[in-house]
Length: 341
Image (cartoon, rainbow, N blue to C red):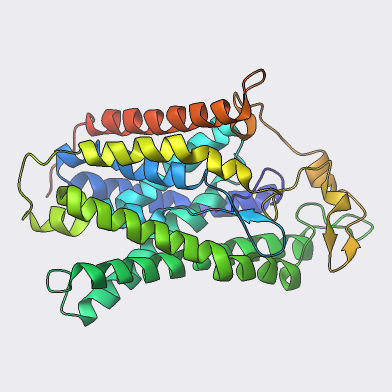
């Protein structure tokens, strides 16, 4: 679901980034006002879970690949505002260090995965738990079911937004020959290409991941569950070692993501897109925006390092990403908070 560089026109990227600026401003303000100071560094845990989840590629319908995002999970742990900041930060590191997702498309990727997904997923979770008398009365099974359903709907809504962003490009931006300048697939192709795999596979992976990790954290570190944080009813001094142990296990298992062959839909390079077959016919040309567009040389492209075995480089990338996220949110927690008025 990561939109690469040059698949969206610069104007489209500007619009999506402008749309996210007030969302980021609101989220940062609410997080610093609403979350206890001692919980701010732990947002890095939610960001790390999201970052690691996105490294586990799975085969999808149609021969492409996809992954979970963990946006709803982060919202369940620290609230949707914190999830927005957490997933946005994870996406920024992916783009700057690993070339996963475009820098120009950063606003669009955040709109889909850091705004639509966590806020909608958490809203659905709340709707379901309220139908059972609220989260305090709903049992663990109900809450896990609500988490799964919320995350499933959230990621599919995010995929739909990405499909629309892809699909309107050839309608708005073409060259003198009528060929697309950026993404060459219109809505009739982009929507089913994105939605069928997410509805059938990726959404179920997101739901299972969210419910499983949520249940684990709820049992081992309930003070990291947003509803418990807001109520202030969790005991002090709970050890977070099990949560970090789970993160370490995920890091060790990330090479499983290398087993999924193929490229995610809409993430082909300029050198291969002309040969991509859609509806039995190859595209036959390379959009000029992709061919001559802006690019960034990143330190670990595609989570790989020259001269290092692929598996080792993937694990190293996971360690770097998770560690930086923990450090960044620790630093974030050191910024003096504004007083409530």
